[in-house]
Image (spheres, each protein chain N blue to C red):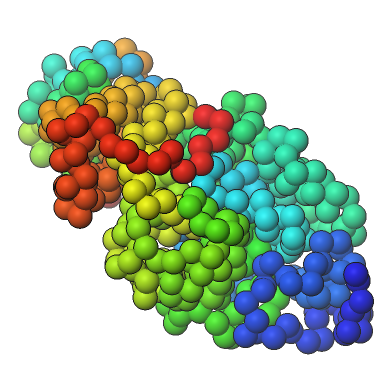
Length: 68
Length: 429
């Protein structure tokens, strides 16, 4: 069964912080405003908002990946 | 002096192999810098296909010698598989940049055996299916000049060999930074999102290996795993280069068989196993040497004893040396040396560097800040640069709160110590 997980490009990330507003249960910001992204597969009921979090990023640094 | 006691070989493969018990494999006692002397010493390198070379590399358990310690056989296999998949010829990059200022082994290796390194690159190129070899070294360094001369005097090969000068910056020789530099002139890490084994230099599958790794690979390819394993440990056969510096009588680079007790390795530099030392480079670990005298110098044994092999350097602190001051200095350097691309590194390293300095000046709150910040920074960069600084800081904290707790108390009460001047070498950031 395939799972979804978040993947961040740390070079692209500019600490806008919008992702953390979309999915506060999973994404927290560090003291400099950069998101700490969970590495483990996302629970299915978070996937929709994880996609919103990725879509909210102004520099497209966050993606939802499908892993088999 | 060039007197040779053995006749020069005419066959493609050396008609004899050097004594496998001798441990001057990479750094020959009798100089063999030029092509003719090199061939007289070791013969010509045979061409081995992937199916021949990879099992030999796996049998020897050869791990990369650039710091990360990735299994070389797996790396070669991944690039060969990418060549088969993409139908693009690969590129082999011999990383002779040696960005870590505590290490001088690759500089010494290239000075003494430049053709062995190139032989390794050629053998790797044949195995993965590469038509281009890049020898990368610090711009205008002695290594750069030696490689230019060596490449020029070699007879033609099936691969195009070029020598490229790389900026003298700590981070520039990280594998993805090197590939990015070769592609765009920008020597900053490209991160895990760039799979260089598949789309590296010129968009082609790329094998980046450290100079010593390639020299070892050349020996495995030429003489086979049984010859290679005549010295060393069962898990890690062969020899290794160790850079020894700091408060030792004869700093320099030595070649030792894996598993040689740390006591004997230190003795090569005229040092005794006493006091604190930084093992593995600027991203390494602090160890107390007196407890490690009998520990064998190998990846597994060093790790089990709380050390790390890393770039293969040992920097010994003088009596009374302060690892808190040394660590603060190193992390300030690491913060400067970063590529300023990823937030957790760009902001986190200066923060923990300042915490280390504050701790040295007696700020007890810095301990809590470090304990909170280190795990937050770890693993969040595009490359492992921040992780190296975090690992070193954690190792210093662990030492300061256990074995060195009296010394830490002195910092906390007196705001400093009477340590002699720092000894860990730091290069240009």
